[in-house]
Image (cartoon, rainbow, N blue to C red; front, top):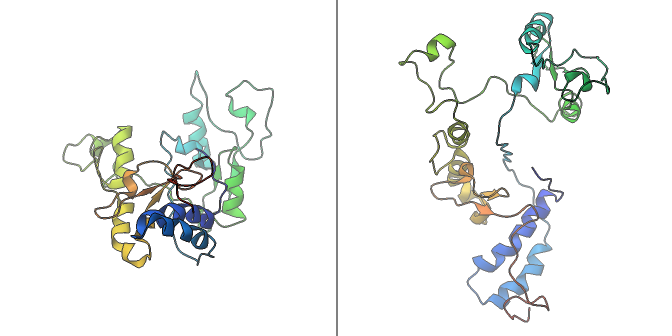
Length: 253
């Protein structure tokens, strides 16, 4: 995953350079002349939903851990099975740089967090998530939503083996579950719930082309029935080709 240093306003300003050319119906030269003025304008505030979709697997029980005595003892027992014990260490345990590569001892103890409503339990984050610990405890800018997934109903092992119990299509298939997260349907879906929100909200935007913007290629989540995602790179909109003088298509602008 790459890092984008530009601010959101700068990101949209760069994206606006491309739209100014295609959206207006006048001559290309007039559109080009307006780009400098448009890009220099101060943008008003706005609201946006930003989705960072991390493809791949995640060992979530090693990411957010219950650390009250009974829960942590159970976790340690289950994760310290031979021949490859992987249980993380208790909070406050110092890191051991001399431990074997891949050993939890090299990381040190888990990082405690203080949820507002822990209901008598305690929790911690993986030792490598110090920045997120600060965002949760100090900055109050991070929320953790546990026990969420693609299940239709809460399901235990016995219910899973029962054919009549509702289950997601192709459960345990990575591709299908990734698509289900984005669209509520398995692989092959073409419309996502982010795009459907865009369908409903597009009329509130002065430039509807910017309703749905993706910097990660074509994403099912952003595809609507009406809204089409505006694809850019991590450096902004894809620029038009120019000649050696910086002119677009031979224009004097």
